[in-house]
Length: 366
Image (cartoon, rainbow, N blue to C red; front, side, top):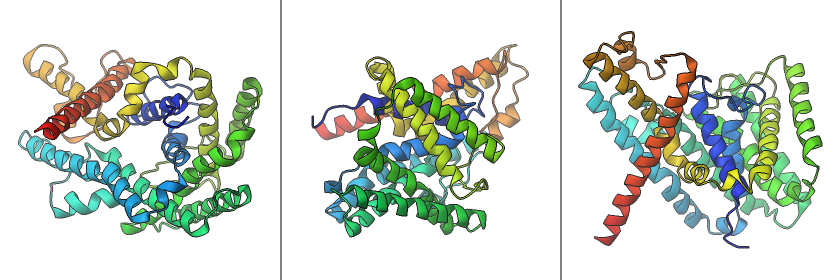
């Protein structure tokens, strides 16, 4: 039915967002099998896969309109949040913080498309520009090759995307990823996962009928064999793409195995957990969480800073690290305290997005 919510993907968006937040705690939170299927191997590919799954050819028939719509959805909020964090850097500088580069025209307008980490607080926003470029590139390529309606053509296009992804890995391993080249390498790397989302919906989903137990057994077996062949659990820094040295295909296989595992898990929880209001709140606010979860972490650390300054408690809290190192975490009681950082990394961005939505509604009424 047109317009029907697919709660499997609500769960996948929420799971992927948790995996990103978890990764930015240095892996100190509840793992959710991330020791087997590393969040550093599948989390970013999962978001790209989900975007590809929902691509429709009719959306790309009018390329200029498609580009404008995607820019409005992705680039406009990217730049608005970038301006916000430029102000955050300026304000925190007055209190002795050294996190983030000083705002200038380059950091305000150019670096969000190239690097994304210029102000550090929103460094996870690096993901937005290559996703936009991948969606536009996919629309252009599919308009050129017109694969719709033919499984053979879909297979050919997906194979082409995988070959382009392998080219990206090759370029990365040659260290051809500096400045503007990293834009190309990210685009090439993203295309196979975006294409996998389309390919799954149009070709593979009809054959996805294996019972759950053998399906999960195959996922674990595939991951085991991959670890034996590679010699370690695959784990990558997708923002830099500077450690893709396990082979030209390995990052795509590792990502696909993780996606396959959680895709079936999403089917199992679709009637219950996937429809939970809190899971849906995370899925519906994933852009804000991606942009702002590190600010949530800083809020927790700010609380410790106040306690140290005003009370006898938390005297071991390192103020210098707090003001200079974004990934410094103070954990009284040990790593279990990281759950509070993770909670803040979700709650604050959701509240921020609610505030933004409220302002937008009032502006429309004005």
